[in-house]
Image: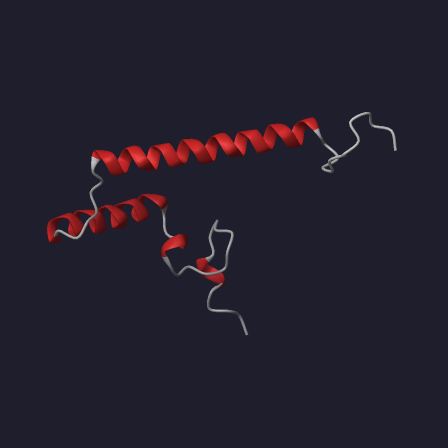
Length: 90
């Protein structure tokens, strides 16, 4: 017997046509936008103060800087292991 899901797959990668992730991206944006407007109307939406925004930006900059530092150190040592012998002789 054929699966009831067969005709609903279309060009999608997965087999399910349910849920937010399976929706068209434009429809996802519409739904998210409605939720944001409702939260603001209700008064429960979080609004950053300039100090909170500054702190969040600082943390993001630090994380980005650390990620770049780690990526650069991995490029200079492609083997992934560090040596305590600077001359390279073992």
